[in-house]
Length: 280
Length: 273
Ligand SMILES: Nc1ncnc2c1ncn2[C@@H]1O[C@H](COP(=O)(O)OP(=O)(O)OP(=O)(O)O)[C@@H](O)[C@H]1O
Ligand SMILES: [Mg+2]
Image 1 (spheres, each protein chain N blue to C red):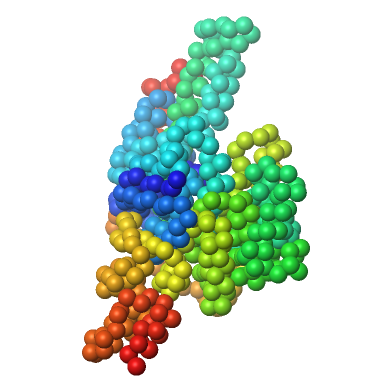
Image 2: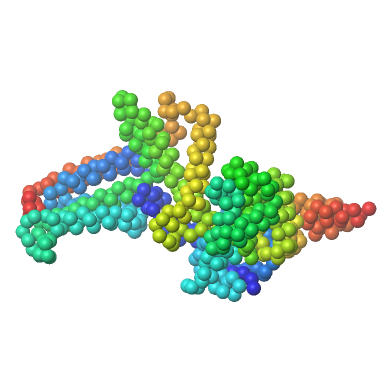
């Protein structure tokens, strides 16, 4: 049971002079329960790819299989797919509309046709999971801070209890503390529920610490698809496509070039610190 | 989803028509439309169609983009043709129940259809080959004499160009919000009228909020750059006529004189006149 992409291509504005071939022959397999980080330069097609997973965009050619079923089959239930594959857009706070936070989070489960009790239970649970303080539940979502709005929007998708959660740059524009909090909550969510998570991000530090696997996108193709350790070993190639490895990779490589015997594969600050301490 | 609106959408490519001064295109379109209403015989329409075909050819815009604009007025066109066809008195040809089709009706309906189609395609050529900003620039310059009547020409032009600039942005925003709500299980397509209207709330509220936020940001940014209206304001790229523009005016005058003389010549006069 997994998501399978088979030679997926996508062209925006096909048959016009503005046509843009944004996804080029993407083949992927995402097993259940994996935490996948997606990185890539601005405009590399990350958001476009993410919108294919729940059928919001239909591939120009190629197939997508969710749990073994072709989602482009005529009688495929797209609504069900969208409840199973939750997608949190870039800047999701722009989609809030209800008079208070709690009703906004109820929107998703209510659309699934659940009864009032179940809807509210799920909304409450989702809001707790994203770590929003109880006293904010009945405030207008427009009076919250940017980070709080972001949490409400994530809760809005979580409340649908998806099996796969896709987060498109959930930490863009947040301060380091807000960023860490959100990422930790996402990680916790994954370990507790065994959800499959796809996390799009610009920050290597973000993904290095939390994910099992990294997809590097470059101009619409997958450049690397491996564990963080193996991907960051290619830090020179990453630089060529406008990305970078975590800072510790650079420090360790520099130390090694200067004759110290360190293993350069550490990717988190803690691992790097341990590695350096070994020298003494 | 919402991107298929062509009437008034620029088609980016390189052509001599694209490079013309917007004033030439505005004036030309106006003259062309006037000419369409002067003709009294088929020869005039034939000339007009040939002239338009030439311009379309020169503009390098694929013909199907021109016709896309037609789709939006197809309904209007059908009604016009229908009314003219059945309600024109004259020599009856066919009788259907209480309606009758007359010889005059057929001719009038055909003229109307031709005239409307040429009119729409003619103005599509202008909007397809001129960016909205260029158009408002041209309009501002052409309307400048109205300033002596204390008309705020610059301000009106500025408002127009902002509005035009925001159409694609708001469409994109609508698309984004719509997708975000669909991802949360919203359904914009099924249900009765009341249900559908209600389904628009999750779309309209964020859209309005974002429109106001953008307007606010823009006003702030304009103020930060010391914008204070048209008084004494110069342009980075002022509109200047080139040789091609004078040539185009020449061609236009030639077309007008030629087509109107031919189009009003009694020799070819339409049968009912
Ligand atoms: N709705 C659209 N219509 C036309 N082109 C689009 C549209 N959305 C995106 N594109 C183009 O597709 C390409 C990939 O866009 P996408 O949003 O997937 O990039 P991204 O990797 O998510 O970038 P970012 O990191 O900035 O979010 C870009 O070149 C963009 O200009
Ligand atoms: Mg993106």
